[in-house]
Each structure stands twice: as C-alpha cells, then as structure tokens.
Image (cartoon, rainbow, N blue to C red; front, side, top):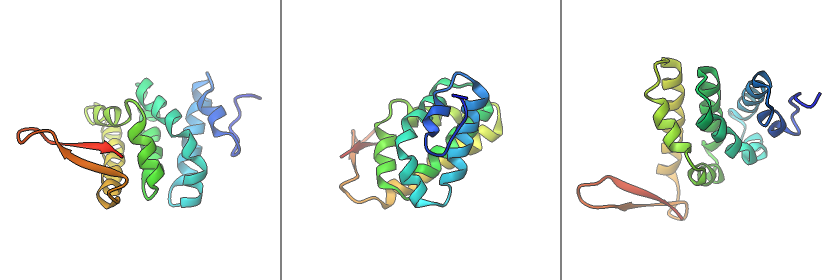
Amino acid sequence: MADMVSRSSPEQGLRSTDSAARLRAVREIKNNVIGNKYKKLQFLHVLPLLVEVLVTSSDSEFLIQAAAAIGSLVYGVEDGVKTILACDGAVTSLLKALTSSDPRVVVAAARALKLLYKVICKASDSLVAVQPCSEAAPPLLVVA
C-alpha cells in the first residue's frame, strides 16, 4: 500500500496521486505538529510539499488543512519561517486564500498569516530585515 500515510514518511502521502491519501497526509502532519515543537522540527522538511498543496489545490478542505499545517509549522520555529519565506508562492497563496468564497478557507489562511507575522515580529535581526522600498511603498521583508 504505497499510498498509506506513515509517521516516518508523511511526504509519501503528500506526493500521492490519490487525493484522499494526500488529504490524510496533510491532516496527519497538522495534527502532529500543533503545539509540539519537537514534531515541528521533525516535519519541517515537508513545508515545501505543503506549500505545493496550497499553491496547486482549489479544494477548500485541502486549503484549510494546508494553511493550518503551515501556520503551525512556522509558529515558534525560526527555521520554519526561513523555509516558508523561501518557498515560491507560499505567502502569495495564503494571501490569495483570503479572497476565497469559503469563509473557513479565509479563516485558516488568516490564522496562518497571523502566526507567520507574530514569529517575524519576534524574530531576531538575523532572521529577517525590514527594508522600506520608498516612502510611498510598504516595507519589504528580506530573508537574511
């Protein structure tokens, strides 16, 4: 059963062509990392795969679960913030999800963005630097 999700290789489920297996994998990761810094560090390597789910899916349940997992993975883990900011489309996809017609998607994306923002605000100067683009433009976040 190649599509079965196991704790040792959640990325196998995320890479599955079976959408039910992919959703189970996203949920399993989310449920494992919420409130557990040790598990967050263990699952950090799947952040790019979760972002891929967020970027490529239009299914509300996938978007909700992926946003919740991403938000939890980055919260309290500086390497999570570095990883998410380096992933193409991560923040853009979370912002895009704010325009969803499904209010549950909007709430999940807003929570993920809020958690990311909290970590960035508490981060040391070595994590990110805020550089103003111009007086008329908002500040630009630069990954150090």
